[in-house]
Amino acid sequence: MSNAVNVIQLTLHGELVGYLAGYLNGRNVLIFADEFSSNTHRSTFSLITHPAFPHSNKLLPEPWARNQRLHPTLSNLLPEGSLRELIAQGLKVHVDNEFHIFSYLGEDLPGAIVATPLDPEDVPDNVMSFISGGHNRDTKVVKFEKLERENKFSLAGVQMKFSMKEKDGRYNLSKSGDLGDWIIKTPSTQHKDVSVNEFSAMTLASLVGVDIPEIKLVDMSQLDNLPQINLPDEAFAFAIKRFDRQESNRVHMEDFAQVLVKYPHEKYNSANYEQIGRVLYEFSGDALADVQQFARRLLVNILVANGDAHLKNWSLLYEDKVTPRLSPAYDIVTTNVYIDGERNFALNLGKTKDWYAVSLENFKAWSEKSGIPWRAIKPHLEDVVDKARTQWHSAIADLPMNEAHKQKLIEHWKNLNQDFKL
Image (cartoon, rainbow, N blue to C red; front, top):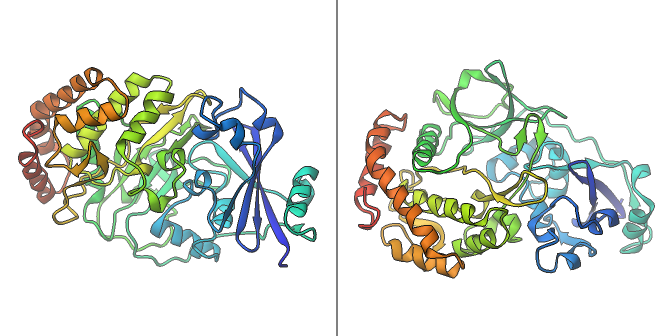
């Protein structure tokens, strides 16, 4: 049916946000509910819809329309790369069919948005009127085809990550209506020992004042019901507690690709750390604490040689449903052990991306461009360096990181600018 359209209802903490219409030609339109857009005490769907954000009152009354991809606020909720291929293959839909992948994953998305496919009779009259009148008057809302995954996969992809539920020391793929409380990252066929790498890098970060969730290494034998994916012969998966889940309740969050309205493929080349700093300093519920924590993490990414701190690896968390705060850290990995000659940040920091060129002066330039007082930042950077110099050499000896990776990281420390040399 060329005039067929599916409709998904979006809710946030049980509050109706609006409706997402997906047309057969790939066009999709997000229509906000009047009761949501007119409510000045509404939960925060995205920072750009927060009443304090510039022009938010103009954004909500207008439909958000896109072709093929969903709007970045929703598109960034979907997995990327091999994990998306695995899901699309199981659903028998095209990997770029974001609308239908979104409808399938809608019960356990990152954050607190819940997406529920609607039967035609459940679509409100005003939404029906918009859908048919705005495009083709013959357009009809149709029932969703039942999408069910078949666990018949054979992907030798990069590291996969799954939302899993822990019970009695075992981890199961979360089922319909059952929220996962851990993100489990299986070993990678592309990068050796990445599970123990991430555990080690995250542990080092925590020793110098970086706020991280609970993490652990989980024996592969403790994982149940994994899809049939090709995995290397490594003992451990990396597990990180979901900070967007608290006692089976959803906590809303969004990454900075969503905040800055960028698509996942733009996560490396469409922004810089000054923009993130400015957003945090202007809109966070505890601006000073969050930019100081942000500065610590920026420096830690240099010290652990993590070149992958792109837009999607920084997030806002809305624990009170409204006020943005910097989320705990995640995805801190020593990447230069996998990329020969790597020496760059993911984004610009004070006019440079080069780890070995970065000094306190670059951080000063970053803070000034972000509108953050340098006097509030400098002591936190000095504290990170002091703690790293006194603790990291002994700590790394006891961490499970691959020995060759440890040696490369120690060499990296020797090559840093004098301000940060360990």
